Image 1 (cartoon, helix red, strand yellow):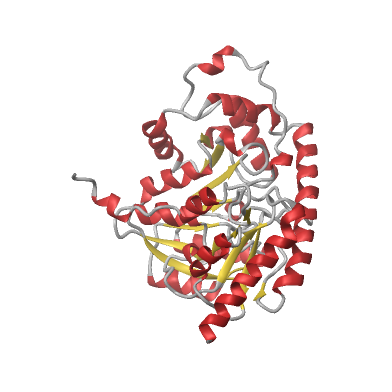
Image 2 (tube, helix red, strand yellow):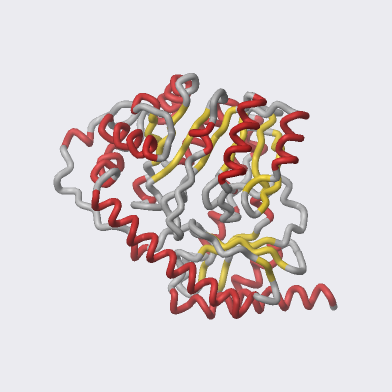
Length: 388
């Protein structure tokens, strides 16, 4: 059977495979970025107009686009509703970006580590990944400048606020410096902010796109982490030079985003009840983060280093004795626990990076301590076997 050349680069998603295994009720999962089901809001359907069952505009519902633009302007993003494209989850933004920019061999710039599903789709389209290591407050600026001087990537894909997987939040200094570098070298910025609203300390730094003076940009977000991931409603906001191309790509992909999900999002975005829901969500996740920190201190203090996240859904652990954490998966599942290995979050995953991404939002608090205890035991056993 003759498939396209691209299919040879198609990799299965390790996280989807792990999540499938974690569906067994006895498995304690720290793997996926799943919101807590207890915090999924109650939504109403009975008032939805029948017209929402009809085909809609490729750009998205006008009322929703206006609301999203208004929220973005509060953050300092210079935009109008005409620059907003409602997409099928922000994952579709990455697909559209890949179609817009990437041919086989196209160079792009990424953080190391970076979002696994972004890496998967960019490599599917044949991108060559230039990576910039992350420090505690953002990218290594010296290495970023060096990459930009040696190459001219088609775009830089960055997650500046509670980065997935590392939970790093860029400092003000790093945000300004990154914007200046992208302007200097004329590199388009793709800024992905699915976790911005999940802040535990009240901080709300302006997006990098709001600091750009010359470079083109795409800013993307989602309601999946704040409302219902099953709605599959996200959005992108693009500089005027890019928007028409993205709209045509969206039309060719699926005509328009589902209107039922858009209608639900319209009932919440910008409303007082949405703000109240966000306040409750932050308090809930802050408590789960705190409980997770206590359990990590108890079971992992001798095994790993980590920074306490100030937002988002993840802890990022670095083992004091690095190993390929993918080798831990089988033993962990046998012990009824699972997690996300760190290697797939790097464009060159064959190195023994020795990282684990652990989700703290979804696991039952009553099982948290036992789950981390079992995972720590698996790591100790594997490390002891390596020494022996």
